[in-house]
Amino acid sequence: QVQLVESGGGLVQAGGSLRLSCAASGSISNLNSMGWYRQVPGKQRELVAVIISTGSTNYGDSVKGRFTISRANARNTVYLQMNSLKPEDTAVYYCNLIALIGTGNYWGQGTQVTVSA
Image (cartoon, rainbow, N blue to C red; front, side, top):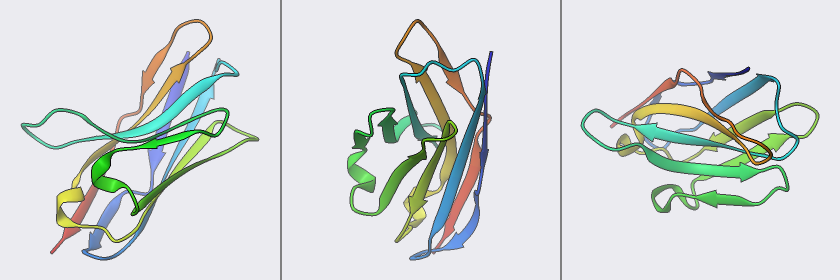
């Protein structure tokens, strides 16, 4: 029903920046939440940032002041601007969409972000 495709991951030096993109396609509710989560081996999935269709945002404590989430209104696309990257930001980053009308919880395949010291 819904497909999420992430892009923009890669290798960057500490202090650098990356911009992740996530494009959603399919049957998508008008009211939804899109966001980014990350996971490293042996640890729980962690909230990075979420934005709902009204524009409200929420950030995980570890990325506040460094990451910014935004979305394009014309299409269900969400961006994550990551600045001042640290080695501890290294993880697989997953795009997520939750339908707030009806039901639906969807995940992308993930994109690797690696930050070198």
